[in-house]
Amino acid sequence: MISKEENDLLTRTNAGAPAGELLRRYWQPVALSEELPAGGAPRPVTIMGENLVLFRDEQGRPGLLGLHCSHRGTDLSYGRVEDGGLRCLYHGWLYDIRGCVLEQPGEPGGGAQRDAIRHLAYPCREAGGVVFSYMGPGDPPLLPSYEFLTVPEPQRTVTKIFYRCNYLQGNEGNIDPVHLSFLHRYLNESQAVYKRIVPGTETTDNALLGQDLAPIIEVEVTDYGLRVYTVRGAGSEKRYLRITNFIMPNLSAFGGSTVGEGYAVHWHVPIDDTSHWKYVFMFNREKTISEELRQKHRAESTPDYRLNRDGANRYQQDRDSMRTKTFTGMGFNFQAHDAFATESQGRIQDRTAEHLVSSDKAIVASRKLLLSGIEDVRQGREPRHRIRDPEANRFPHLMVVSEVIPDSIHWKDYAKKLVEEGQRT
Ligand code: FES
Ligand SMILES: [Fe+2]
Image (tube, rainbow, N blue to C red; front, side):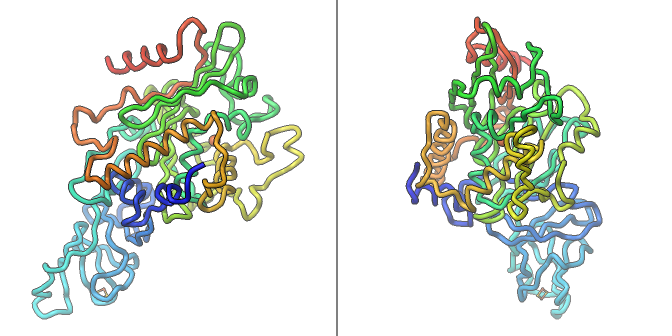
């Protein structure tokens, strides 16, 4: 449980609000590259309560500008992409991606004073199939060279999902290891759509998650955020170890269909305080992602990135299937389960009414990191994981594990060994 003041600190992300100022110190996803094809239309986007227009200029460069024209406020997302920028339909002012007014064609001489106007513009970068923007003050930090952004295109995939709730409860779901034994469990393995045999065993994740409902959970603070160890019994002299990560300030890395050769990431970007986009990344550092897996990655979604199951249709819950198929009665797609669990907490979860228990320790630790990041920004210090040094811009120690290990090695020693191996490569 936290106070109302702390809940407000953590959840409010408009410009000037404490979490908004923290999130603005990092590059944030603002669209999928596929939403912004060369020669395509500009798109209105709302990020952290700011109404903006995203467009791709004739050179293919993404630009993110204030939505309303600096002249008399007309919506620039209806504008023409031409002559080196985005042209407003009302009186033809032309903006480049830096927010410079290139032309005021209705003024004598093309507008002698036009250089005095600088339209709101945020720098953009493109990586891993996503357009990122830096919406904070000063020089942007480096865009992190995460593996899921830098492996060759055939080895990665990304999509996004609309969430009707605050970004924070979305991300807290990723570092809540106990829910895997309940929310996502399926009851009949032979019918399961998602199934993986865990290395070192002949059994599935689902079976192991169902065998030990009350795992050991440990949390370690790292340079990027938190490493979360979840350890379950797995039969005689074996343990089922999962390692997931909270990455400052609004993303998490965890297992998924490519675990062992890669991992999945959820990055929760506020649209406003009561809705957000969850960017869903998956990569494989060894091999191509199959077409089948790419399709699965976008299962049960509309072309505009909404889940078919939502609160309006009660997540299409089928109570018969709760007896024979799944714990939730909401199908096999874990994205729908997560949407149900987090959206149904309310648009902004009232954390003054929660009762956290020992297994919520990663959530508690992540809030502490966020609050200290908010304080860092207030004090003019660099918050954790704002990367300036190119040498520090690699993450072999950001690892995700889901495997069975012998009892004879402690899970932390096992992780240390993996980090050392990763750092040598
Ligand atoms: S309102 Fe855009 S050019 Fe006048
Ligand atoms: Fe989940």
